[in-house]
Length: 111
Image (cartoon, rainbow, N blue to C red; front, side, top):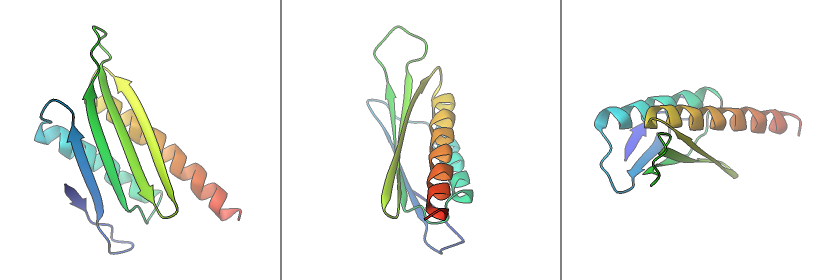
């Protein structure tokens, strides 16, 4: 489990990375941690995130799957992306979560 400090609310966001049936490299975990930390720009109260890295059992080159579950107060966001590398699928999943956070923030400001 990796903690990143959230300076806006003084609570560290927990980042838990789990790799299914393989060991994730430290560089990959650090890469994912860095990408998730950037989401704090769009929501200052992210509670935690769970990342699951999986290999799809196909001969297709796009067999790297990243699933991210992001918990924020009152909601849970989820993104699942598949690509040629874990870095690419993690990037795409984080981008999907960024869009969800922006959309959610927009709805919250209209309430």
